[in-house]
Length: 395
Image (cartoon, rainbow, N blue to C red; front, side):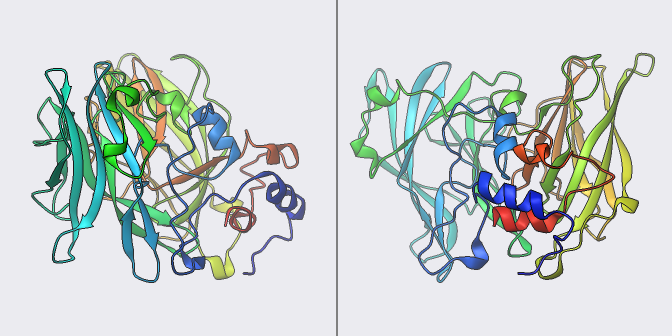
């Protein structure tokens, strides 16, 4: 693979030695290889530390990490994982995914093995097959792993389709993902998920499982996401970091926050960004053109304690044009029920005047400013990083 790296040989060499190859590798897989996106490592890294270490997605509890993918057959095989659902500090149900196919071999129908807590006693293992196809509609479950309406207060999990960028393959795919409905909520400690590896659900002692720590996730608070708070206080200046992102529209992007401005009279807060967009083209990847640098502003109301919007970062129909378009603004948490049309790249959220940013599922991000590579080349929007160097490092 040839890339235009002549301006940055030193940064490429350093990155190759210091960073792991953690991105999707679909185009290079041999039959039987598994999808390397996998569940995020359970570690003590904050979201910011994770973003400084490698290019990757926000750490959703399950997301699309529940399966292995075989390229030769395109079959999704559930991993040997058991998940525990904890509500209000009490483990109420556990489940494993047995299959993603019905008896006719049609994909989109989940078969789950479950156990639930009833009056202090754990049930025997039961088998549940989803009543509809996830490709047709979202499917929700309560904490005892029973199908429920997604608007029901008892709803806990949502099974839904999300877009995932595969930069090395040159396209994005629609993946079946699993998310907590408390994702992006203002009471993140109410619902939590525990994750363990096990060959079968009947090998797990639920009493022992209840002692495990919840899986770290961007559901918990902004610090757990790869971007997090854009400033340190409601009236503070924006964090001066430059981020490298791959979007679900297959654009490579450099962006930074330039200004956060409160308007007391209008009761709004405006967040301004600079961005460079460049469509991913692995065969002949161009460098970012600093002359195509564009700015855009996101505005959120502060009339309520919480407000949010979905944002498309780059124009999906153009090679280098920035979009910054807002979609589906709310004054209540999105939870797991965000809108997927049109495709978007960010959740921008306002909490009592303070702004946080999280990635849409499937987007990949690396904090260039916080990485060790920044010590060799000072991050700059005017002398931007060569995306080809990043491809060769992470793929």
